[in-house]
Image (cartoon, rainbow, N blue to C red):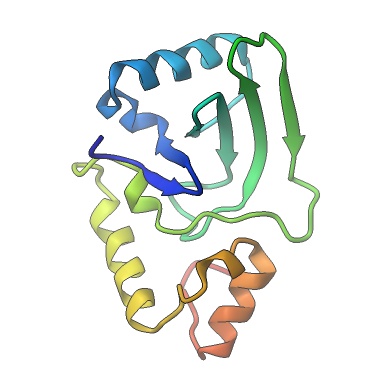
Length: 150
């Protein structure tokens, strides 16, 4: 595939890198996109469903919070939508450099941040750092501060 972040059987890809997906994944995302009139910037591709996700300030925020999720099951024309904008502890995105193409202008910067946090053991037990509070707690416990993030 060459692009995307795999998490528990799902592949996450930024919309700017959809052209790097294989044909069947592209078709599935484009089908979902044709049914959704909202804003989104990341596709979550699973075996039998597609999610179109909106992460706030994707380019500027080192660990953007999930604002909205729209999920369409295979063969369906109706979707489940979840609004995260009023949640105190929304899911956040790590390792976003994996979601974009190699030539994305911010990819190297994001990869450098990830590399430094890996070296500091910030991603140990990654399943425990998926929300804003959990991530903030992890960074605090390691005495780390990431510029541009709360």
